[in-house]
Amino acid sequence: MTENPEIMIIHMVEGATDEQTERVIDRIVSDYGLQCQTMVGAGSIVIGVKGMAGIIDEGRVTELPGVDRVIRITEKYKDASRNFHHEDTIVDVNGTLVGGGSLTIFGGPCAIETEEQAVESAVMSRDAGVDILRAFVDKSRTSPYDYRGLEIARGLDIVKAMKAATGLPVVCELIDLRHLEAFLEAGIDVIQIGARSAQYSPLLEELSRIRTPVVLKHGFGNDLNEWLCAAAYIMSGLDRAGNHTGAGNPNVILCYRGIRSFESETRFAADISMIPLVRSKSHLPLIADPSHSSGDRSLVERVSYGFVAAGANGLEFDIHCNPEEALCDGRQAVREEAGRIVTHARQIHALLAGNGVDSGVAAAAAVSK
Image (cartoon, rainbow, N blue to C red; front, side, top):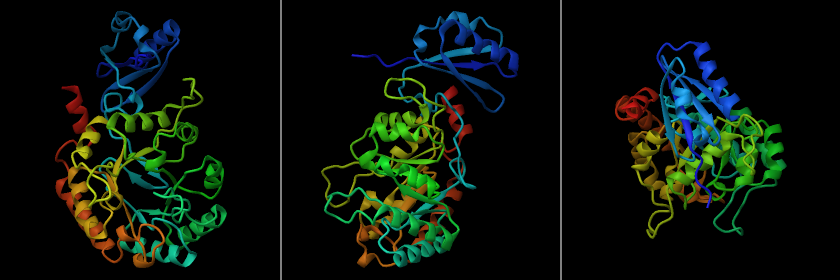
């Protein structure tokens, strides 16, 4: 059995100089052949050591001028960990910010069926106040016999029409690696990894080599550690042999949707306490999906408010112009009520701002105690 690699985090004293920081990095690189990543926060500098940091003689580091303290952690998901990066990560999606103090709404049809349906649903979503438009050309369904979307090229043409009609950035689920280049050429703004693909390592590895933002859904059989490990792997730039193939993709957004349980009245069991827990464990933006967790449009509104009150950085839910005729998940899609959900969600977010660990500053204080 292979032990988890130990990770080292070096906190420099407040006011440490660039020369002192570089001397620490030079010692780690020259003496141990490891890579370092530097993060500058509010008045402090933190150096993260990548690789098998267990080989480092801690005394050789603490003796250097400017070093405040050294912390060793054994979390596998270092790149996604709040211990490694105290302040909230904010992902910029072509000018729309996800994370930090923002509440970002992702919404639109669960699947593209026709151009008319897709564009009408897109305009309805924009008018409801959605920030980023769902535009899924390919679907991984409960049964492969269910509707899975149009032919990819045709679907991407319709995505372009949706963007043109609304002016909104789009998020699109990627299932097949063979379609990645086509997605990028079509100008997809955010790539989503669905629950069924959340631990598919070849897909995660390929996404670590680009800079396009990625929404990583919570797999319905994943625990917290597995989910954050998948996120960290996208950020790491590592290949299957553990070699660095690039800088990694830092633009990862987590999306919680609940897990499969014995309860049959809701689609998935969503544990509301996971929202503040994940926010305290990870610096990555966290949105939540009330449509797939509840599976019932009559529940989506209240579940949305619960997620926001618990500290989610945003929501992602299904909006369809004609849910009763939808070919995919019409039962959980909302219509006119989408605007009310967005408005009230923003009010709840504003009301509770500053309460709990909902900012990088608050989280940093909590971690340093």
